[in-house]
Length: 286
Image (cartoon, rainbow, N blue to C red):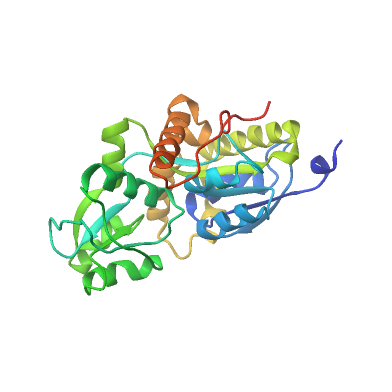
Protein backbone atom coordinates (compact mmCIF):
# COMPACT_ATOMS: atom_id res chain seq x y z
CA UNK A 1 0.00 0.00 0.00
CA UNK A 2 1.39 3.38 -0.99
CA UNK A 3 1.74 6.39 1.28
CA UNK A 4 -1.04 8.21 -0.59
CA UNK A 5 -3.38 5.26 0.05
CA UNK A 6 -2.62 5.23 3.78
CA UNK A 7 -3.07 8.92 4.60
CA UNK A 8 -6.19 11.06 4.41
CA UNK A 9 -6.59 13.04 1.22
CA UNK A 10 -6.71 16.80 1.70
CA UNK A 11 -9.77 18.11 -0.11
CA UNK A 12 -11.21 21.61 -0.39
CA UNK A 13 -14.70 22.40 -1.61
CA UNK A 14 -17.27 25.11 -1.02
CA UNK A 15 -19.89 25.18 1.76
CA UNK A 16 -22.58 25.46 -0.93
CA UNK A 17 -25.41 22.89 -0.73
CA UNK A 18 -24.46 21.13 -3.97
CA UNK A 19 -20.94 20.35 -2.71
CA UNK A 20 -21.95 19.27 0.80
CA UNK A 21 -24.74 17.12 -0.68
CA UNK A 22 -22.31 15.42 -3.07
CA UNK A 23 -19.58 14.78 -0.49
CA UNK A 24 -21.65 14.05 2.63
CA UNK A 25 -21.40 10.25 2.54
CA UNK A 26 -17.74 10.29 1.52
CA UNK A 27 -16.71 12.92 4.09
CA UNK A 28 -18.42 10.97 6.88
CA UNK A 29 -16.93 7.57 6.09
CA UNK A 30 -20.11 6.00 4.71
CA UNK A 31 -18.59 4.84 1.41
CA UNK A 32 -16.92 1.42 1.93
CA UNK A 33 -13.34 1.22 0.72
CA UNK A 34 -13.08 4.94 0.02
CA UNK A 35 -10.04 7.07 0.87
CA UNK A 36 -10.44 9.10 4.07
CA UNK A 37 -10.82 12.86 3.57
CA UNK A 38 -9.42 15.86 5.45
CA UNK A 39 -11.93 18.55 4.45
CA UNK A 40 -11.37 22.30 4.15
CA UNK A 41 -14.24 24.61 3.21
CA UNK A 42 -13.39 27.50 0.90
CA UNK A 43 -15.16 29.55 -1.75
CA UNK A 44 -14.25 28.84 -5.36
CA UNK A 45 -12.03 31.90 -5.81
CA UNK A 46 -9.95 30.59 -2.90
CA UNK A 47 -9.79 27.01 -4.19
CA UNK A 48 -8.79 28.28 -7.64
CA UNK A 49 -5.77 29.93 -6.03
CA UNK A 50 -5.02 26.81 -3.99
CA UNK A 51 -4.97 24.79 -7.21
CA UNK A 52 -2.56 27.18 -8.89
CA UNK A 53 -0.25 26.83 -5.86
CA UNK A 54 -0.71 23.05 -5.62
CA UNK A 55 -1.90 23.29 -2.03
CA UNK A 56 -4.35 20.35 -1.78
CA UNK A 57 -4.76 16.79 -3.03
CA UNK A 58 -8.32 17.26 -4.28
CA UNK A 59 -10.16 20.52 -5.09
CA UNK A 60 -13.41 21.91 -6.44
CA UNK A 61 -12.41 24.65 -8.88
CA UNK A 62 -13.86 26.65 -11.74
CA UNK A 63 -13.45 25.02 -15.14
CA UNK A 64 -11.84 28.27 -16.25
CA UNK A 65 -8.76 27.53 -14.11
CA UNK A 66 -8.20 24.05 -15.58
CA UNK A 67 -5.76 25.08 -18.34
CA UNK A 68 -3.45 26.57 -15.70
CA UNK A 69 -3.31 23.49 -13.44
CA UNK A 70 -3.60 20.39 -15.63
CA UNK A 71 0.13 19.80 -15.41
CA UNK A 72 -0.16 18.91 -11.73
CA UNK A 73 -3.85 17.96 -11.49
CA UNK A 74 -6.19 15.72 -13.45
CA UNK A 75 -9.88 16.32 -14.05
CA UNK A 76 -12.06 13.75 -12.29
CA UNK A 77 -14.93 12.41 -14.41
CA UNK A 78 -17.53 13.02 -11.69
CA UNK A 79 -18.49 15.17 -8.70
CA UNK A 80 -18.50 18.56 -10.42
CA UNK A 81 -21.20 20.93 -11.62
CA UNK A 82 -22.48 21.41 -15.15
CA UNK A 83 -25.94 22.72 -15.81
CA UNK A 84 -28.54 24.24 -18.06
CA UNK A 85 -30.57 27.40 -17.49
CA UNK A 86 -28.15 28.65 -14.83
CA UNK A 87 -25.81 30.96 -16.71
CA UNK A 88 -24.48 34.35 -15.63
CA UNK A 89 -26.24 37.57 -16.66
CA UNK A 90 -25.01 40.90 -17.99
CA UNK A 91 -26.93 43.72 -16.28
CA UNK A 92 -27.21 47.40 -17.21
CA UNK A 93 -28.93 50.47 -15.79
CA UNK A 94 -30.66 51.25 -19.08
CA UNK A 95 -32.38 48.61 -21.18
CA UNK A 96 -30.62 47.75 -24.43
CA UNK A 97 -27.31 49.48 -23.59
CA UNK A 98 -24.67 49.20 -26.33
CA UNK A 99 -21.57 47.76 -24.64
CA UNK A 100 -19.07 48.78 -27.31
CA UNK A 101 -16.17 50.39 -25.48
CA UNK A 102 -18.07 50.35 -22.17
CA UNK A 103 -16.77 49.50 -18.69
CA UNK A 104 -17.92 46.14 -17.32
CA UNK A 105 -17.57 44.92 -13.72
CA UNK A 106 -16.85 41.21 -13.22
CA UNK A 107 -16.29 39.16 -10.03
CA UNK A 108 -13.23 37.31 -11.41
CA UNK A 109 -11.25 36.86 -14.59
CA UNK A 110 -10.65 33.17 -13.82
CA UNK A 111 -14.21 31.93 -13.83
CA UNK A 112 -16.51 30.18 -16.27
CA UNK A 113 -18.77 33.23 -16.05
CA UNK A 114 -16.01 35.48 -17.36
CA UNK A 115 -15.11 33.12 -20.20
CA UNK A 116 -18.77 32.86 -21.23
CA UNK A 117 -19.05 36.64 -21.13
CA UNK A 118 -15.99 37.16 -23.32
CA UNK A 119 -17.20 34.55 -25.82
CA UNK A 120 -20.64 36.21 -25.91
CA UNK A 121 -19.03 39.63 -26.42
CA UNK A 122 -16.83 38.29 -29.21
CA UNK A 123 -20.00 37.11 -31.00
CA UNK A 124 -22.31 40.05 -30.29
CA UNK A 125 -20.35 43.25 -29.46
CA UNK A 126 -18.63 44.54 -32.64
CA UNK A 127 -15.30 46.10 -31.69
CA UNK A 128 -15.50 44.64 -28.21
CA UNK A 129 -16.26 45.95 -24.75
CA UNK A 130 -14.03 48.48 -22.99
CA UNK A 131 -12.35 48.26 -19.60
CA UNK A 132 -12.91 45.20 -17.39
CA UNK A 133 -13.06 46.02 -13.68
CA UNK A 134 -12.77 43.20 -11.13
CA UNK A 135 -14.74 43.88 -7.94
CA UNK A 136 -16.30 41.83 -5.13
CA UNK A 137 -19.50 40.18 -6.29
CA UNK A 138 -21.73 41.99 -3.78
CA UNK A 139 -20.54 45.39 -5.04
CA UNK A 140 -21.37 44.83 -8.72
CA UNK A 141 -25.10 45.54 -8.81
CA UNK A 142 -24.84 48.70 -6.67
CA UNK A 143 -21.98 49.90 -8.91
CA UNK A 144 -24.13 49.46 -12.04
CA UNK A 145 -27.12 51.12 -10.35
CA UNK A 146 -25.00 54.08 -9.25
CA UNK A 147 -23.38 54.55 -12.68
CA UNK A 148 -19.86 53.68 -11.50
CA UNK A 149 -19.65 51.10 -14.29
CA UNK A 150 -21.72 50.65 -17.45
CA UNK A 151 -22.56 46.97 -16.94
CA UNK A 152 -22.02 44.11 -14.55
CA UNK A 153 -21.58 40.35 -14.85
CA UNK A 154 -23.49 38.51 -12.09
CA UNK A 155 -24.10 34.90 -11.10
CA UNK A 156 -26.25 32.66 -8.89
CA UNK A 157 -28.87 34.39 -6.74
CA UNK A 158 -28.46 37.73 -8.56
CA UNK A 159 -30.53 36.14 -11.37
CA UNK A 160 -33.53 36.60 -9.06
CA UNK A 161 -32.70 39.89 -7.29
CA UNK A 162 -31.36 42.31 -9.92
CA UNK A 163 -34.78 43.94 -10.39
CA UNK A 164 -34.53 45.16 -6.79
CA UNK A 165 -31.69 47.44 -7.97
CA UNK A 166 -33.70 48.81 -10.89
CA UNK A 167 -31.43 47.00 -13.35
CA UNK A 168 -32.14 45.39 -16.71
CA UNK A 169 -30.96 42.06 -18.11
CA UNK A 170 -29.02 42.79 -21.27
CA UNK A 171 -28.14 39.16 -21.99
CA UNK A 172 -28.03 35.68 -20.48
CA UNK A 173 -24.62 34.10 -21.06
CA UNK A 174 -25.98 30.61 -20.46
CA UNK A 175 -28.71 31.04 -23.06
CA UNK A 176 -26.12 32.18 -25.61
CA UNK A 177 -23.83 29.25 -24.82
CA UNK A 178 -26.62 26.66 -24.96
CA UNK A 179 -28.13 28.09 -28.16
CA UNK A 180 -24.78 28.19 -29.98
CA UNK A 181 -23.42 24.84 -28.74
CA UNK A 182 -26.38 22.74 -27.54
CA UNK A 183 -24.19 21.78 -24.58
CA UNK A 184 -24.47 22.28 -20.80
CA UNK A 185 -22.55 25.05 -19.04
CA UNK A 186 -19.33 23.80 -17.38
CA UNK A 187 -19.24 25.45 -13.94
CA UNK A 188 -17.25 23.61 -11.25
CA UNK A 189 -14.73 20.79 -11.70
CA UNK A 190 -13.28 18.28 -9.25
CA UNK A 191 -9.53 17.88 -9.74
CA UNK A 192 -6.95 15.70 -8.00
CA UNK A 193 -3.17 15.53 -8.06
CA UNK A 194 -1.77 13.24 -10.71
CA UNK A 195 0.94 12.19 -8.23
CA UNK A 196 -1.67 10.23 -6.25
CA UNK A 197 -1.42 7.56 -8.95
CA UNK A 198 -4.03 5.86 -11.10
CA UNK A 199 -5.06 3.44 -8.35
CA UNK A 200 -5.94 6.09 -5.78
CA UNK A 201 -7.50 8.34 -8.41
CA UNK A 202 -9.72 5.50 -9.61
CA UNK A 203 -10.82 4.66 -6.06
CA UNK A 204 -11.54 8.32 -5.43
CA UNK A 205 -13.69 8.67 -8.56
CA UNK A 206 -15.62 5.52 -7.67
CA UNK A 207 -16.12 6.80 -4.13
CA UNK A 208 -17.44 10.17 -5.34
CA UNK A 209 -19.94 8.45 -7.64
CA UNK A 210 -21.06 6.28 -4.71
CA UNK A 211 -21.38 9.35 -2.48
CA UNK A 212 -23.56 11.10 -5.08
CA UNK A 213 -25.78 8.04 -5.42
CA UNK A 214 -26.10 7.71 -1.63
CA UNK A 215 -27.26 11.33 -1.40
CA UNK A 216 -29.84 10.77 -4.14
CA UNK A 217 -31.05 7.53 -2.56
CA UNK A 218 -31.74 9.14 0.84
CA UNK A 219 -31.49 12.96 0.75
CA UNK A 220 -32.58 13.27 4.38
CA UNK A 221 -29.29 11.75 5.57
CA UNK A 222 -27.27 14.59 4.04
CA UNK A 223 -29.62 17.35 5.28
CA UNK A 224 -27.78 18.11 8.59
CA UNK A 225 -24.42 18.49 6.79
CA UNK A 226 -25.95 20.60 4.04
CA UNK A 227 -27.77 22.95 6.39
CA UNK A 228 -24.84 23.22 8.84
CA UNK A 229 -22.79 24.89 6.12
CA UNK A 230 -25.53 26.61 4.09
CA UNK A 231 -25.01 30.01 5.78
CA UNK A 232 -28.59 30.43 7.05
CA UNK A 233 -30.04 29.53 3.66
CA UNK A 234 -33.70 28.59 3.62
CA UNK A 235 -34.02 24.78 3.29
CA UNK A 236 -36.27 25.16 0.24
CA UNK A 237 -33.62 27.33 -1.45
CA UNK A 238 -30.96 24.77 -0.57
CA UNK A 239 -33.07 22.07 -2.23
CA UNK A 240 -33.45 24.22 -5.37
CA UNK A 241 -29.68 24.79 -5.40
CA UNK A 242 -29.04 21.05 -5.19
CA UNK A 243 -31.64 20.30 -7.85
CA UNK A 244 -30.04 22.76 -10.26
CA UNK A 245 -26.38 21.82 -9.83
CA UNK A 246 -26.41 18.11 -8.89
CA UNK A 247 -27.52 16.22 -11.98
CA UNK A 248 -26.51 13.55 -14.48
CA UNK A 249 -23.20 15.31 -15.13
CA UNK A 250 -22.31 15.10 -11.43
CA UNK A 251 -22.51 11.32 -11.55
CA UNK A 252 -20.47 11.22 -14.74
CA UNK A 253 -19.38 13.83 -17.28
CA UNK A 254 -20.23 11.60 -20.22
CA UNK A 255 -19.80 12.62 -23.85
CA UNK A 256 -21.78 15.85 -23.57
CA UNK A 257 -19.97 16.89 -20.40
CA UNK A 258 -16.52 16.40 -21.86
CA UNK A 259 -17.64 18.08 -25.11
CA UNK A 260 -18.84 21.09 -23.09
CA UNK A 261 -15.52 21.38 -21.23
CA UNK A 262 -13.43 20.99 -24.39
CA UNK A 263 -15.68 23.41 -26.26
CA UNK A 264 -15.47 26.12 -23.61
CA UNK A 265 -11.71 25.90 -23.14
CA UNK A 266 -10.92 25.53 -26.86
CA UNK A 267 -13.01 28.57 -27.77
CA UNK A 268 -11.57 30.54 -24.86
CA UNK A 269 -8.01 29.67 -25.95
CA UNK A 270 -8.82 30.79 -29.50
CA UNK A 271 -9.81 34.18 -28.03
CA UNK A 272 -6.54 34.34 -26.08
CA UNK A 273 -8.32 34.07 -22.73
CA UNK A 274 -6.63 30.88 -21.46
CA UNK A 275 -3.64 28.76 -22.49
CA UNK A 276 -4.45 26.09 -25.10
CA UNK A 277 -5.11 22.55 -23.89
CA UNK A 278 -2.47 19.95 -24.61
CA UNK A 279 -3.73 16.86 -26.49
CA UNK A 280 -5.19 14.38 -24.01
CA UNK A 281 -5.08 16.91 -21.17
CA UNK A 282 -8.61 16.05 -20.04
CA UNK A 283 -8.11 12.26 -20.13
CA UNK A 284 -8.50 10.50 -16.78
CA UNK A 285 -5.54 8.22 -15.85
CA UNK A 286 -6.32 4.53 -16.03
